[in-house]
Length: 510
Image 1 (cartoon, helix red, strand yellow):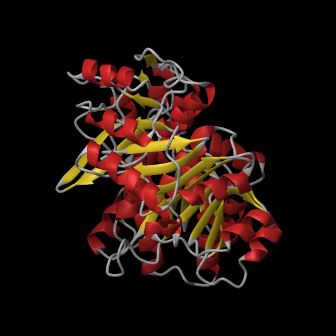
Image 2: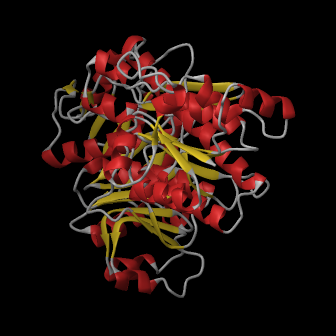
């Protein structure tokens, strides 16, 4: 038996090679891998001893040879293949262990295009694809985490066709992801990120119980192991719908840096938000906005969930809590509640992945775009359009309202008073209706809107939204501006003695 080992990531490779030697495998290796194995006392053949050719062109050509690919690809069950291999002195290669040049690490550390080009692997993907194609006869290993699994399968005589088939699938996923990364990088560098093809590649983090509905399958796929590194289940299993709600809740709560922010989400829409003196105060104020909708919702906590906050949350049914961190005694509060789910990022504050791009499925394809986010100084640099300027508290409320509006389904209007959301209208076909709906809800909840700040994620096309806000007692408004009737909106604000700011940037969310 013969094994070909050529790896960029050499983690665990010496022990793996030693185990293979113990099973009677002859080791063939290349370059740095061969050197390491020899240094560690593992007897191996250098690739040139097999190919009868030296490595050429600065290592660009070393494994692209019939003695290698013939050894991998010839079918052992076909007499003609076996006879041809024997005729040309080709020895079968029964195991291929390859991981590829560190292209991702290279583009992260340098912009030198010549160095980047040299870190595009050619021989590695070719060997992986060859071994995967002939999985009926060959074991293909591309993941360092599979070394022990492969050794166990050989030792326990579980090297079945199904076992090799699973490794084959993983191998093609590996090369497909690698090539996709290269293509996306080249399009990013030379075509502004929007080439003729766009590849979205994620790694499965976990299966969900089902999709949006029980008849649909579902799973969470992650970029750069974001959820593996920043998401831990302390109680319960995250569903498909939980993850979309958690996404919305965390985006809002994490948008305020180290502030003690708490957001409450129901069906991907915010129904409560506040920044109080502490997290308990924030939660109490956030819940006042719409406690009816909050029932069965998702709470995101930008800090540590402690026992006092847990006991307060436990007064009503909240389905999901996602907190930056969770105290053990806080978790104990929910021990008897079977339906509640608790997750943490195990960090000081909630973190976001900062994805560069965003995409959405449409029937027959997907639309793809740069990710939207509110700039750090977007509100601070907003242009005052009214005669009256906002007070310090009003301006703080404007910033909160604007960020929440920017992360909420359009058309959206958000009302904030004393750092707490008191009303929100979202997902409406009319911006006026969004404003009226929000005010009607606030009235039902007995919340005082007088003196609050209001934000819209897009411009007001007419002055009617400002007139409605003025009748409700709104004192300050922030919006992008850009309507052909901006002058009328400004005039209305001045008539009502309101502060009005334009940011110049729209934040539709469809």
